[in-house]
Picture (cartoon, one colour):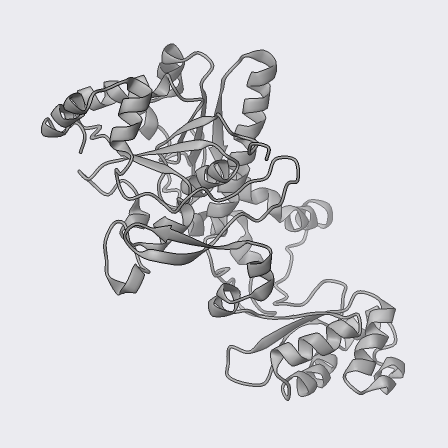
Length: 406
């Protein structure tokens, strides 16, 4: 079997929270050796400290959040409050291709690992700093959490129901989005280095990374000089296009989208009302849009009496785009995701066998696989120092006694 695409690439990972670990998890999934630099002197990654915890028992190795986004990585301990630990980290840089962080602007420089210093150590090093708003500019010192970036990017402005207020989008979408974009930027930098021998520094702004998804709203203002309006689950052109109540409790919903006249006629047949296709209110997409409230009421009367899966399958057989809104449990038990190998069961040394979201792509020439579960904190320290730096066990024990490894 061929190697994964980034086999042989080594990453020294200073990242924390979500955006950074999501970036380096993508690199690990692609075959890179990602070495997380952690410490017990303080919480090096907040996700080790927040729920959900396996079996509701808190602990730095039991956090589902951390264990999901750090699959396939290694973890070492270094107490960077000690100058000797900083020097050891510099030695590790010599053996790495990429250094990553997602601290606030300027923090990585204060720690002694800015790009100018790193390229003194290894001239072709590639570094990415994934701050909230970039390393320069008037917002550079703003706290870079995802929800503020969603607000500043306009996501909240567009999210909500007609006539209502701006609404949060449910998750901190800018974080994983920045992670994916950061991984793409690093791959491009690695290709550039292969061609030229040059390393480079990547200054990524989480805010700017999410703004690229707001093109329609930005163009609406730039071209037409008007603010886009909140439309809930409706579309600007298609109708019906909505999430409809299904039979059961308040969590049972079904999304339906009709984009062509053939699909519209198929939907009318599927819900047992073929005459709707000739109703003067609904004979064109423009008219359906104009009379959308009445159309939604008719469709809801049908979906409300049916199980969400039954209704979805009925419409799908007719050629209409429809799918239930899925809960976390629905996703974790989904047969399609299981069969494709996206959901993986990993054996973790402390929490046992657990289901994880795995790799969302298939590549025939360079297949990828989740290498192992997320690491226990510091579990790879001895191995890394022995294999990369040639340290003896006695030397490592001395570093522990001096709290340089901590």
